[in-house]
Length: 266
Image (cartoon, rainbow, N blue to C red; front, side, top):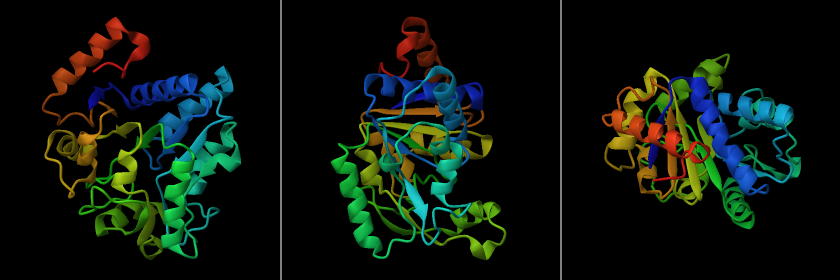
């Protein structure tokens, strides 16, 4: 696991975009795992800019999103498909048939989840998976107590997650209580993982996930077992990391030695 502490949210987003761009340069038909939430918005904004101004090509890319609320149609303003359309898909040249977001109105949820897993396999697996982290350390909607070997499934959201998401809805009772989500085991099968986190309110859980024990109570801690994880945090998000000085030293050495390959040397 490599941890990069950026000075600002903007720098964090640019470094993340550099990694995605390098992946697309190496493999134009890359399979990207994507996340929603406020944290990756800066990354998506930068990717859109590079597409429009520099010709970054998404025409052969295949995408799989982590999760979606149960019973929210794609046209619902708070659905994750709507979020992705507004922040990324509508602004790049990705082929609509290559976009995969869990369908919240699936008739047979269990059958749909099995299909989603198979679609990832048919695409050749995810090349690079973008993640955020919840206030309780969850990745995707793998709430505390989720099996570290879990697969795509229906998940009941915790009270904290529901309260955290209430700000996006007009009424608290409108917040979905269930979501379809990739499992921790599904996520860990990605060839490369990119975890983004920012703000002081996430600092404690970031430190717990990266430097604490591996536990199902903090599903993000399972990333410690993956062979190729890059964590990028802003200064506030990394403020509780005990080894912050070491992480910063590594990053500066890489910039000095191989500025075009940050994130590729361990």
